[in-house]
Image (cartoon, rainbow, N blue to C red; front, side):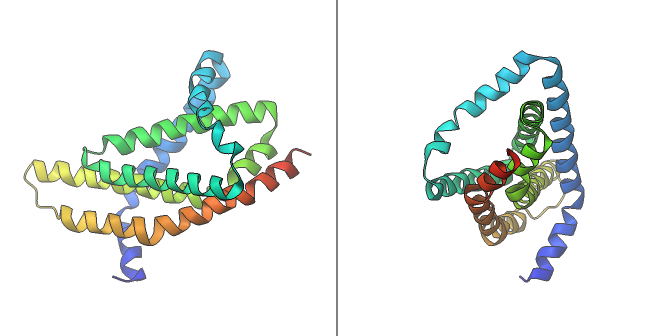
Length: 195
């Protein structure tokens, strides 16, 4: 397979990518609006993030490893557990969207938009597309499984191969780059934004 084949496959994922983008940003907006109305809603979702505070105490190179492993595992789960009729990728995209909305509300109202942009954009430009494409692949796998269950001919083996190829050839290196940016560059951007 070549880069051209990968681009053709990405085009085939177009509708699934669009769905993952709409779900992500739609639930982010819902999370933001819900956070603006209900402090308990904020507390509930931020409690989930409290468990990750231990990461911030690590040296940057260890933070890089933890972030990379966490994101790669999340992408792998979103893709491969799509075989559960796409339900897991749907949960991944909606829960991440809600968390982004809640965190965005908190950060914008406490530190401002520039601080939020500094905390998300440097690594998010790379990380978010990889995650959304992974979710799209999981949705496609779930859809193809459903089609095969109702008797339509599908090639799940080839699809699984393409998913693993994407994970190893594209997602892993891009997520490693995003984790490096998040570990070393994003903190600098945040400190500049908070001046």
